[in-house]
Amino acid sequence: MTKLRLAIVGAGPAGIYAADILLKAERKFEVSIDLFDHLPAPYGLVRYGVAPDHPRIKGIITALRDVLDRGDIRVFGNVRFGIDLTIDDLKKHYNAVIFATGAVRDADLLIPGADLDGSYGAAEFVSWFDGHPDFARTWPLEARQIAVIGNGNVALDVSRMLIKHAADLLPTEIPGNVYDGLAASPVTDVHVFGRRGPTSVKFTPLELREIGELNDVDIVVHEEDFDYDEAAQAAVAGNKQVFVIDKIMTKWRQREAGTASRRLHLHFFAKPLEILDDGTGRVGGIRWERTAPDGEGGVVGTGEIRELPIQALYRAVGYFGSPLPGVPFDKKRGIIPNREGQVLRRDPSAGSGGLFNQQMYGVYATGWIKRGPVGLIGHTKSDAMETIKHLINDAGNWWRPESPAEDSIVALLDERGIRYTGLDGWHNLDQHELALGEAAGRVRIKVVPRDEMVDISLGQ
Ligand SMILES: Cc1cc2nc3c(=O)[nH]c(=O)nc-3n(C[C@H](O)[C@H](O)[C@H](O)COP(=O)(O)OP(=O)(O)OC[C@H]3O[C@@H](n4cnc5c(N)ncnc54)[C@H](O)[C@@H]3O)c2cc1C
Image (tube, rainbow, N blue to C red):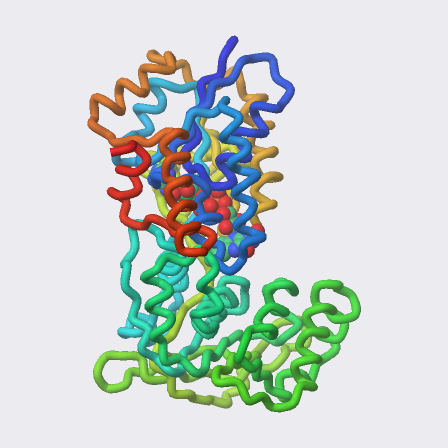
């Protein structure tokens, strides 16, 4: 083998890091990589997940762009795997494929009332405020009191975007319609619920501290949540992150009652039981059970039930991967089953209930679709290293494509009438958005409709 023709599906951080790592790796063969994404813009959740008021994290795009701008990776935007291209097409044109398709949808919250009007998945809201082309462009922001379920950073992002004054978001890259929607929001109180105690949260200290510094927003914590048991005390003493989180909360506990016009309440040891109907099929309240430490770092129900009136609820209980046609999928975990990035299929002799224990040669996974939707952007780099190591070692088992020439895939996309966008197209769109932003004194103004993104990319 003298050349590896590799397709990578997904131009988020995982896909771009995988391409970069392979190109820089020690190997005995040439490499030619085509990177496909179903969106006309690359960078995945860095562009469409990370909150617009986190410019430092959004800045990771600069490093990812540097990789693409080097010119040794071909980019094909607006190409949807499963619709525009199939696994059989890839087999015909490449020696191997890496799936780096991430996760975009919400994990389910299985409590009564989760499907009432006014109950939203965090992922949908995030896609709205980050201007994802495939999601609704208007968002109902009519609630004064809102609940957010979850104790991870996405719950913090959602709560912060809901409670922050829109004027404080204006300098960021939020789309105009998002600013208008948030500016008209009557919200006064956002209540964040977590089943466990303050020492068990998945918030990271930086993001937690940030909510205490918001303009005209008071943080409300409840003394009853800070009666730490031995396990919690040990966590504060033995884990640096928990120590810092406890310190931040201690400061909030000692603050005088505030006079801000908006409040963000943190409710710990609160297990949501039901989202209450207001009588018209809309969210009217939340009912939860007070929990207590079980002595082993977990919690048990106490039987004490509480309620609070709310008019909207956001479920920030995790993201979940989506299946791809022709590719094995673990429905329970929402991932492509794999062993260190080598995709596994079920043992054919064992039927549909068989274990995923047979390597599917030529097929690899990396990023959130490989290991599940947890972890920061940086983690996708170590992920990619592991996957690339196996891809290189598996050279003897790669596919043997009948049309490996680089222009044959271009001919196929042209033949199918796919309006794919290349790296030049992304540069056009990027420049256009930056210019729109500059004219308005803002970082960037995103173009949201997919057709418009494609037209601008293609210079049409
Ligand atoms: C709301 C939110 C906020 C976050 N904030 C931070 C933060 O502040 N800091 C941090 O470090 N991490 C943050 N993260 C985590 C970070 O976004 C992830 O770790 C990272 O994006 C995962 O990378 P990925 O490439 O695996 O997936 P993704 O970023 O999701 O990229 C997947 C790509 O695959 C493409 N794709 C999907 N399906 C197809 C298909 N069928 N055909 C073609 N292409 C397809 C998608 O369009 C996308 O571009 C946040 C995550 C979320 C959800």
